[in-house]
Amino acid sequence: MAEIKHSYEFMLVISSKLSEDSIGGVINKFKELIEKNAQLENIDKWGKRKLAYLINKESEGIYILFNFKSNSEFPAELDRISKITDGILRSLIVKKEN
Image (cartoon, rainbow, N blue to C red; front, side):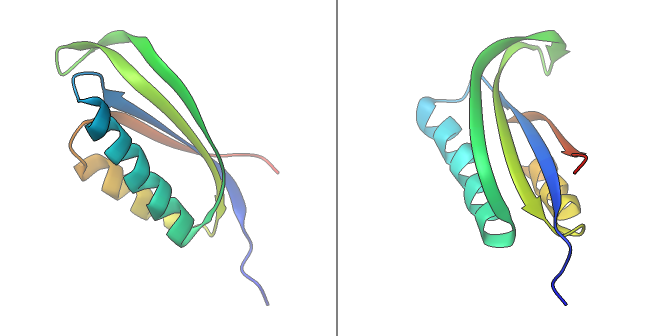
């Protein structure tokens, strides 16, 4: 029997102090990780936005939204990796209602 897949949204806030190449590298890292372990539906690049409050003395961040489907174990690993990746100010994974 096939594993049940759930839909998720994964929001990344990347430091705007990073170079364009570094920002692209972070996006690519998570894109490849999701494609390897889940079914990537789309990536929505919101661009640079003002933060509601300072995070690590930064007032702006680059917002990226990933939509994917995976088993229920993968989001925990994705969250762990986002917490140890340099340049990530915040991340959030939300399970969407089907």
